Length: 178
Image 1 (spheres, rainbow, N blue to C red):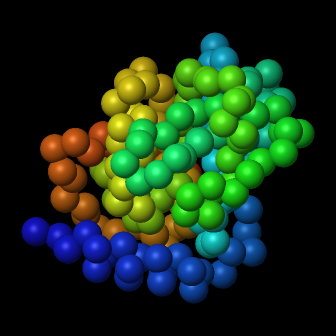
Image 2 (image 1 turned 180 degrees about the vertical axis):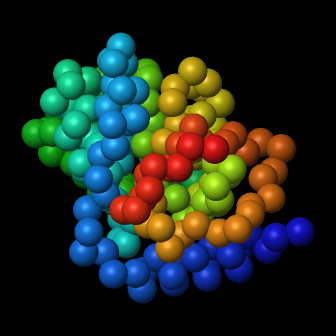
């Protein structure tokens, strides 16, 4: 049994100590995913999280609408709200930069998600509140793409019954498809 709390603390320290000078490249496989998609859910990185901006920019250039998560608290499921890239963002719980609550809701075709840790089988360790697990369940047809630094990869994670694996993970070094 993995002590997820201890693993989160260790992997956050690894992530926070990582040299983040390199942007994540956008692979051709991701660009191919944009064909036929209408909306991408991205996020604004907090602290040392890997920045999904190159992926968000590529999606916007391909004509996709962009949505960001909106969180109320730990227990309430997150919503994805449309964001035009210009409207002001507010600081929400956990330091998240998010759209105003009145922004229109979005139904994402692709969901970019920050990671604390991941393995090559597409398992992920998030912040622990279950927000993205519930979002993945709500939008089962959306492509789930983890965004992380390569140092966040671990040999194996033991997923819980409610964990939904990723379709791919992008790092500064690799595009990993389980």
